[in-house]
Length: 162
Image (cartoon, rainbow, N blue to C red; front, side, top):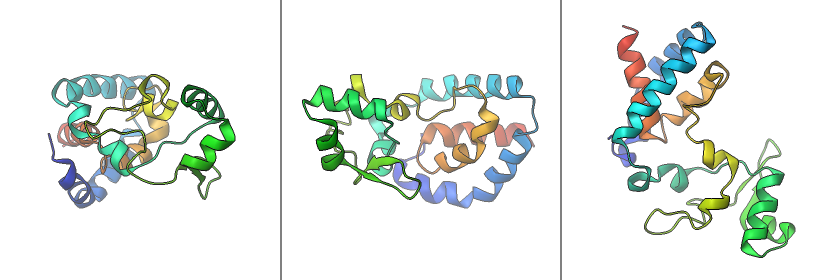
């Protein structure tokens, strides 16, 4: 596994390569691209343990949709408005995100204290096993700076495209 502390610089050094790759991948038939990503996703996570890394929780924020806010605030025994005031802010796109990193719900052991009710964006991260990968190729390139699994997937795709 790529060391999370080195991932940002390593991915930045390959940014052009990964961006070009993403453009080529967008031309692959959607079903074929999804299948390829899903296979590589499974392979990557056979070797990567999220709890050893938790870089996503330490460095970025998911988007909290209204349903997430309702569910999490209920779980915490807070009114939704109080939850928003305590933990969230509105970003430049008008989305609710965490006020700060690392995530307030991440423990020292890298376990999430609200795992059962975590935001949808957290449940779906790093988004490499979803349908319609063509639609999120730019996000996938961005996530190479955060997630060792995404970096590994893009590396494998880059090697196979040569």
